[in-house]
Length: 215
Image 1 (cartoon, rainbow, N blue to C red):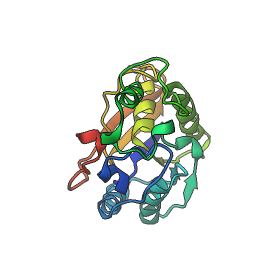
Image 2 (image 1 turned 120 degrees about the horizontal axis):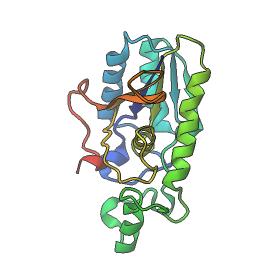
Image 3 (image 1 turned 90 degrees about the vertical axis):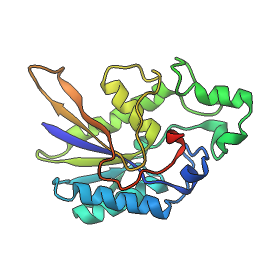
Image 4 (image 1 turned 180 degrees about the horizontal axis):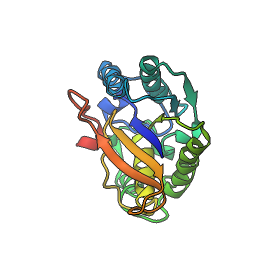
């Protein structure tokens, strides 16, 4: 059985300011750095062999803190990037027009063909996230990888493992530096392949970040 840990990056300046990040970037806040340190302590004795991160700054910074404690190098995987939010990237949520808010809501309300202008669909996101996860199957036997990615991206991945459509209504909350785990296994009582062991665990955090997913 292959166990894969999934971690959302720590709180960023734009999370705290309620700005849309997508594939744009902003640095971790001091709280975000501390959250990453708490993740590192949580997984210190789990035998993590590989730390793999999206190529955005906030995930690489989170991953480096974890990798330093686990004694790993950080490997970069661009397919773990967040959903591209098109023309809404870097916008403050409270400044969106009614039309722009409709575009944004299409990414979470179950709209099959939802897409922000110049952005990415949930179906496209799901495809590249699954390809990135499946690459873990090629790691040496006994590996235990940890992937650092993003809230919408990880939520989409976990939802599709559960059999939901990529564009299904978003009902899984993954807060900053939450930990999820998916396993690849054969079981008499579960479907073969990827299964969800845990999702969105924040028991290791002193205080979750107040980002846009919690308001």
